[in-house]
Length: 417
Image (cartoon, rainbow, N blue to C red; front, side, top):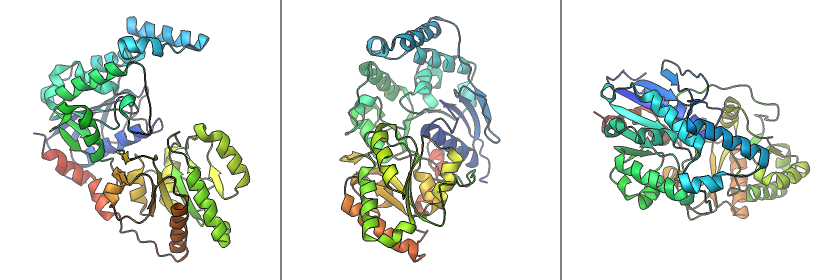
C-alpha cells in the first residue's frame, strides 16, 4: 500500500456497478487505484442501488421523483411502450436530451449542493456509454469548476465518432454545445488514451492545454471465480471477451481460425475459439457457424464479470477486436485485464490505434480485422508457441506500471494542489 496523502478527491460517478457496463468496470478500477495511491476519497454514484467499495465512502444518489422532468419522463416511457413511437427523435432535437436525462442530472446536482469545494483538492466526474450525466450536473454547479477534472472516456456525441461508426442521434447540435461549454469550464480534461485526446481537441479547441492521460487502470488483485464448463484450461483457447458490435464483425477472425484448423488438422483436438459477450447484431450468422464448427463457442449474451476475468487469466491468447478504420482512438476497457493475464494478446484492428501505440508499432501479434491470411498466420505461430510452452510473460511489464496506482499518483500529484 502506498502511504496516505493529505489530498482529498470528490468523485461523481454515473455508476460503480461493475455488472452494468465496461464503463462502470473502468470507473471502479480507477476509484480503487486512487485509494491505493493514497488519496482520501468520497464517491457519489448514480448506480440506482446501494454499493460499497472497500474502505471508500460511497453515497448512492437518490432519484428525484417529483417535478415536471420526472413526470414527463415517465409519460414519455409509457407512450413509447404502448405505441412503439420513438419520441426522442421528435423531442431531443428541441431539448437536446431526454426528460430522464434532465431529471437524473438534477438529482445528481441536488445531492452535491451541500458539498464544500474547499474540502477537496480535486473534483472528478466519471461516466459510462454516451451519457455524461455527472459532467452535465457539475457544469451547472460553478463552485466546482476551478478544481474539476472531466474524464472523457469516449468521443461525444455519437455524431463525432470516427469511421466506421456512422452514428447520428437526435439533438446532437445541442449535445455539441454542451461539450463546448464543458471544454471551456473544466480545469482539466482526462482521457484514457492519447489518440482520444487528440481526436476530441480537433473538435473542441477549448480542451487544448487541459489534457491529462489517465489510462484504464490495472488493479493488483481481481476477484476471480470458477471457470465455466465450456472453458477447458488445458486447451489452446483463443478468447475474445466483449461486445461484438456491428462495426466489429468477427467473421474474418472465424475464417482465419478455420484456415488454421485446415492447415493444422492435429490442432482440432486442442484449439478453441471463444467469443464471450453480446453478439445480437450478428446472431443469425453466428448461430449457423456455431452449429457447424465444434471448436467455436459463442456465449448467450453477457457473462458475469468475475467469470470473464478468470477466463482471460486462463486463456492461451486474448483477442482485442477493433473496427476496420484508419484510426481507433479507443483504449478498450479490457486492455488492463489482458495485460494482467500475461498471456499473448492478438490485436485485430487498424494500423493506427491506441492499443498498437502502447504495445509498439513493431508488435508482432497484429493484423487488420479483415486480413484472414494474416490472422491464420498469427494463430499458427501462437499455437506453435503454446505447444512448446515457450510463452514469455515479460512483454507487457512496462504497461503494468503505466496502468498502476503508482503511475496514477505521480501523474496527479504534478497537477493538483
